[in-house]
Image (cartoon, rainbow, N blue to C red; front, side):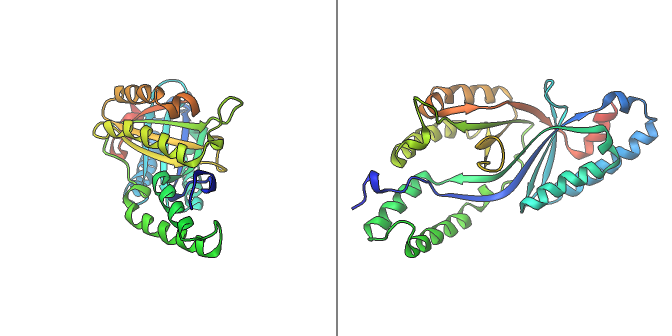
Length: 274
């Protein structure tokens, strides 16, 4: 009974931690005018807050020093709900050192795991059972499936920061232009392309860890990508190879790339004092 034409278009997803990326500019000119004792007092207050955030094993924060001119620091917060991501922003701004930190960019999203392959199988099975899409029976079956997936995938949708030195963060969209439109492709075709796309990433699994967040309706782009590695060259190699894949070559549009180095809270005071 099921055919490509009758399958619903929207793939299923499961969501977990809410995420806030804060890109910050440090006012080094004003900072340099302060006495060292005053600097240490403010830095210890910041370090105390970061230790508090880092100690949260399920919903931690981490700070990175950034390459280039786009920002000096980046804070990434994983939180249980969206209100807590905003609370992290407010807590930082209320610290004494907050007067020397200017937020130049931010990104708000939620950890997302796309279920393209599972979606096609589930939709086919429900159609074969004679269930009408979006009927009450259909919705109950879908929710039961998603509940099982949330339990099975909990470590992936509630991630912690990988123990890697470097981060690469960038936002991206799927193209929906005049020549090609990702959202008008049949779901089975999108599922095929995403499978092939994912196989490239799996070849790099030992060298780079990836966290995908969804931001449709939440921020300016559709997804955010965080890559973590001990060698930043792997970012270039992975993303370059993926550019030749059909999903990226035809349907991907990328935003700015932000690359930084992890700074543990215990080392932050020495780092900012120089």
